[in-house]
Length: 297
Image (cartoon, rainbow, N blue to C red; front, side, top):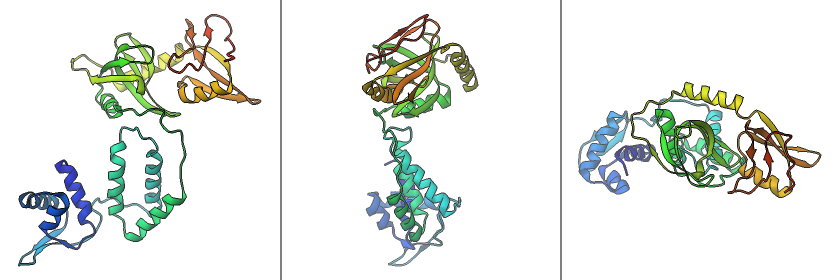
């Protein structure tokens, strides 16, 4: 366990105690007496109010039991925070998935027992259902880091075969069970939207090449959305096709229903596009210069 994580866990461990001894920390966290002494000193510097008691049965006594973080919420706001965390927990793949349980523990530790009981009751009677992730994505945290630091990610895209990519990503979003990112590919000099589960072997490019700012990336995206998807299409789907579209459709597509019939609508590039994803097989059609074709699969 990292030192910073151990100190946080020690704060939680001590939050319900009026007094403690070094042996308590040593047994709970498997640390030596010297490490426990250093931790106590650092906890005090972080603002944990305590004083030492001398004598054979001495130790440390906490002066007060106030929350360690000086931020105050109403009970309604606390309930909303816990419900939001419960909803986000459905996304087994998130850039912050490893933090949910630690956040929950820290927040609970700052609440009186009566409020903890109220929170538990709330979460047992209110639930949230959404589309679970189709696939787990292991590198979302790396994507977020690259976005914030305006860095380029190099790797491979398995969406259409196996193609090298060098992406500067402008946004990361979740839709209908799939994580997507929109990015400028430095190899093809094109903007595109990529399924994150098909991007593999991602690493941050080490070269000191100048990159776009987030504002410049938004301008590139706006030009792309305005000029690229300018040929509308409307395709009729079977029931099976509808199910596959719900799992595999892309942000420039939407599902519509009219009189019990499902349609996939969206925009195509000016040069035409073959509407067939070999990895999903949910659509077979070619639209070039004429009216959009009807899909009967």
